[in-house]
Amino acid sequence: MNEFDLIARLAGALPADPSVIAGIGDDCAVLDVGLPDRWLLFKTDAVVEGVHFTTNAKPEQVGHKALARALSDIAAMAGTPTHALITLALPSKYDVGFVEEIYRGLNSLAARHAVAIVGGETTTNPDRMLLSIALLGWVAKDKCVRRSGAKVGDALFVTGELGGSLAGRHLEFEPRLAEARWLARNFSIHSMMDLSDGVAGDLRHILKAGGVGAELLTTTVPVSRAAKARARQGNAAKSPLLAALTDGEDFELLLTIASADAVRLLDAWKQEFPALKLSCIGKITSGSGITLRDHHGARPLNVQGYTHFA
Amino acid sequence: MNEFDLIARLAGALPADPSVIAGIGDDCAVLDVGLPDRWLLFKTDAVVEGVHFTTNAKPEQVGHKALARALSDIAAMAGTPTHALITLALPSKYDVGFVEEIYRGLNSLAARHAVAIVGGETTTNPDRMLLSIALLGWVAKDKCVRRSGAKVGDALFVTGELGGSLAGRHLEFEPRLAEARWLARNFSIHSMMDLSDGVAGDLRHILKAGGVGAELLTTTVPVSRAAKARARQGNAAKSPLLAALTDGEDFELLLTIASADAVRLLDAWKQEFPALKLSCIGKITSGSGITLRDHHGARPLNVQGYTHFA
Image 1 (cartoon, each protein chain N blue to C red):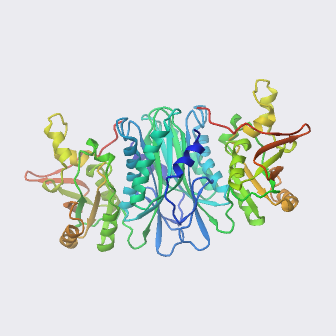
Image 2 (tube, each protein chain N blue to C red; image 1 turned 60 degrees about the vertical axis):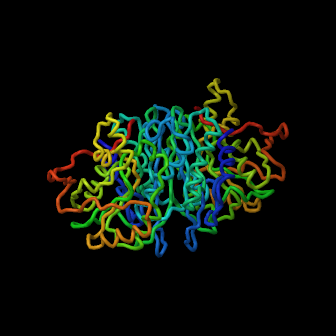
Image 3 (cartoon, chains in turn brown, blue; image 1 turned 90 degrees about the vertical axis):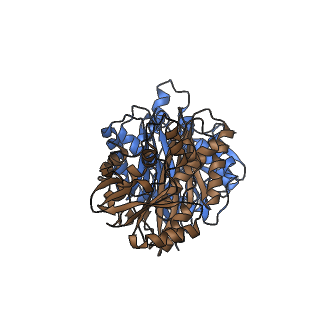
């Protein structure tokens, strides 16, 4: 039983509440707290030594990554992050300088996105470090983009390049907050999420939530240089394309939009974000699951997304 | 360097934000999110296997304790909890039934206090279980009780009985949410917090925040039966009084109120909560630190509160 199955099973036992616009199963919880035009976004995310980072990672990078992952979930709903609490679980004997480096990474990223770190706690996790972020944000009620909402015929887009993140990018990525808000402000985005487990895994959430399928055009998938390099080294178990679809930890945006808006989106994006790729990688279909199409024809993509290495 | 010193040191580096009414150093973060009459409360709290509970604890109790601790912090500000996210970090091979038992404890307590569990995540913590709760709540702006605000001459009160919690109560306690709201609604509470590390440790936060001292009358400290039993067994390193002041994990309310209101409070409390003790254990003084007074005279209390056993 994987995380998604388990959460879904446990969620079945949870009582409903009219203030909960979205709960388990979307990137963030979306809450109506009585503000006229806004919903509150609420998210937690944890990184664990040996699971989400190795002991080779610099503490500043660990702090950055922990917060960036949570920020990426706020981005996935086109929200604006505001306040964070930090839970730092450390071996009993820790070096204060090490903790200060973690906070340097946290503080620097928080400052760039105007997030106030308003507290937290340190506790003991004797065998390894664990860093959990609780994050609040808000989103305009008419701009909130959810995982559900993909429609048959939608064009499927992804920001940036995919794959090979574990070579380094996963410790340094910038969450796509400005890009997501720009998208929601200027276009009718039907569905969106951030990519943490790879398109092969994450896209299935959009498909399931929308009751639809997807066809990916393999030649349009933006394969990162890191994914290609890994394949060239000859010891890779995956092709560059498969790496791009399954490596995980990309933290790019995956979104669908009416195909009639696709060209206007690509043109406007190039003006607004000339340094960041936006790729149309396929379309939403009336089927189910993911189909790969290349010059050989179409075949189902049966691999799943990334699962962490512990 | 202990947790409090460390958080204070790191807090010095954090940017200020006008939406932050209270940040690091109070029971919860208090946030102004634009609601006319209310502030948002935001809190995280984690429990770790071998630190906050042993493997002998039933999973249902672990779930209960984790949420109850966070609820107790909302109570400490006279707030009302609303929404929770659950972070469950588990060894790679876990039993789904075990996780369901944890959720049974969480759900039961959440339902009693109308808290909606709106999501969370499971992640891997290979060596031991860690359960972290992120909790939201609200408090009326004119009823929010903070740690600061104790005034010279205030009477010092504590709910329930103190000490010996690790004999079992720490896994089963009920957070004092209704009691705290009743206090704030009916009396001008000058300062309040929940007792997690024992009066000998926690009272110092109220004293430091208010720039005051306190004198405890030893005969008035409500020593629990568990603390007395432990002392009677002869193998206790502490007297029952010292156990009551330093055992920790009581999760009772510690509060100060003008001495002129003390008798009216005691009378009204007996009417409202006949089954729960409320004790006046001393007074706020113009000095600093904690003084113990008994029939031998007065002496400073130099011991600190509880620190966890890992």
